[in-house]
Length: 569
Image 1 (cartoon, one colour):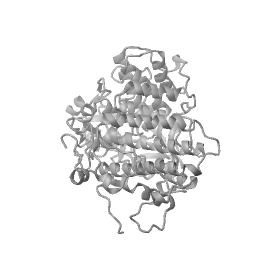
Image 2 (cartoon, one colour; image 1 turned 120 degrees about the vertical axis):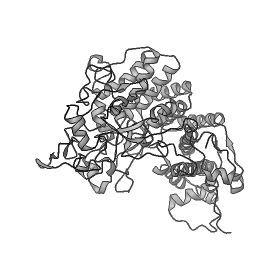
Image 3 (cartoon, helix red, strand yellow; image 1 turned 90 degrees about the vertical axis):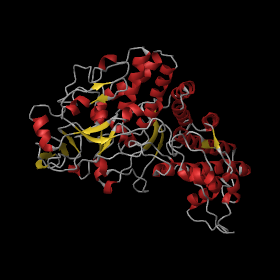
Image 4 (cartoon, helix red, strand yellow; image 1 turned 180 degrees about the vertical axis):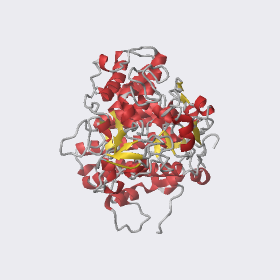
């Protein structure tokens, strides 16, 4: 029998067992190749363990990109999402669909094989293996559901003919199945792991990921209950230091509910590092925080910049929530061996490792492609990034405890169930940023209001300050249905050096020529400064509200399999 090419891509369902075996062993003498290995593989504990290990490959755990949001600027470029050009041929639209269904096929194959191998497995192995695969399957289907809407769903490993016959299932039918998988996983997965055990999916992870898909689908009751179940396990706590949590040296933090380890030795590393490093340190400073993000951080009195008497646009990093300086490099401070200073007259800067003044490649007066808006990221970036040819190995945190606390708070606010537990959840996250106990309300701007509208704005702002550069912002603006408001605005940056000196520096307006008004969504209005010619438009973002709240189904699926395309694509 000759090898059959499976097309369209979601028919990876039909190749599930073959894919599992190839990933687990690397090379198997399959004869013929078109015969799946489901009859011969996953027949004992060792093989099933190997197949489960394959479910933790980083390629299967997609995360949204901050490049798709208003927190980001990549010189004058836009993405298919921020340029409103996303369609069924967009690379990541196709890749997410293909890779996720491949992972689901593998999870289905494991679940079915556990039943077949039951006679040689212990009761503990049967429950754990099935629970782990169900957890993974629920996570993968959650990602498809939240991004594509009506999707193809099956819980079985299928042959080609069966796979071809599958049609889309309404979201209202898929969501309960996802919940059921998470519930089964939570019932049977371990709550904790021994010091010598590899940390894998856990009971808390099942609760946390269930809360995540529930909140994204607007099911606040399930969000509240799942988040509370995770919280009452009393197994997780916020990492003591917010900046340290994201560094390579921090492994297996008690805040990380579910994370994938990385390893330089095993060639599993974080990619695209050089774009985030300043030019003085050998990077490109191409992917940077937007001004929108900079001005979203509250001041130390808990007020936005347009309301706080503490804010000075000439020194925009002063008197801000500590997460501002932990996320964005403050001007005039040491970072990666150099004092970072984008001022157009700072043609030299201090190299802190030698004490010498060197050419300042982080000002556009010297280097044309230095940061277009004078900002660079700091979060998670330390000296390790300059070693090992830009290979770094921080844990890939899928979900952490701060997210659970803020989901719990958001759900109860939207349900009209505001009580002290809501304030405590928000304040725990905020107080950690200040390095104090949340009960020490005099040491940080504790949240005390119980007004629903105010709390909604507070929790949304808190999420933005807390999760910048972690891939959460895109899901948030989609869930809150504000993507059209926050993305249909330009990305602004500094004037070119000569104009910058004449119009901003010489009149004494550096770094920033004014304080933008902040709306209820936390969005700054830079229009007056642009109209006055004090800043320039770097890129024009666009978001089509008639279609972009869901991604398109890949064109290959629509054309070859007759799947229904999402509206207006």
